[in-house]
Length: 222
Image (tube, rainbow, N blue to C red; front, top):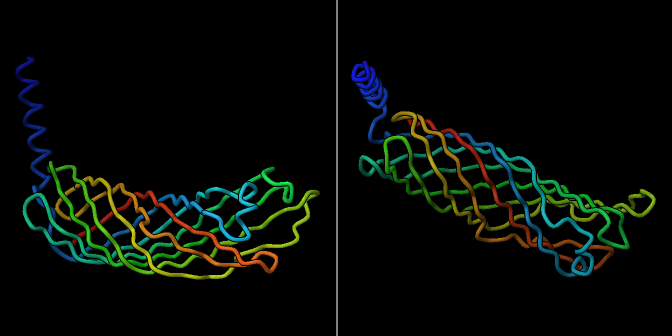
């Protein structure tokens, strides 16, 4: 009986893995991703003396779409060339860190559009890893809202949409459902922080903004 059960298990396992090809298809690539951004501000200028009362990080939500081409170089490795648009929002809050403010709220919006090249390697039919680099443009629209003692909000700073160079490092893991369908768990790590310039009570200030994104995605190759 044990031999029969073992034989059936081997046959069933072989049948399952027969549906899993050794290579992903080459072709047009479409993808969608959702995730969590973590934005880390570094305060300078007039904000440097106030940084103990300002949020040191923000967390929120992110969504993106990819369109490009996947090139299989062999049965287990290849390249992906794609354009990605990402929109994300991070929210931070700091209470009791300053004699000036009872609390400060941060609302940071980012848009990111990059051209990317990723190298992928599948050590098994089911699972793979990837690493790549993107180059493009990012915009930030951060707003900080301080609240004075007694709950009075008298001002905000930031609030303008500004942008510059973006260079994200892409890395992650893949689950290869079949030759056309793929699920990804990955991260985008900014190699270049954006130096956002603003004024606080007519004094020059700046905030270096870096947004790290952890995301889950789905890719389909035609």
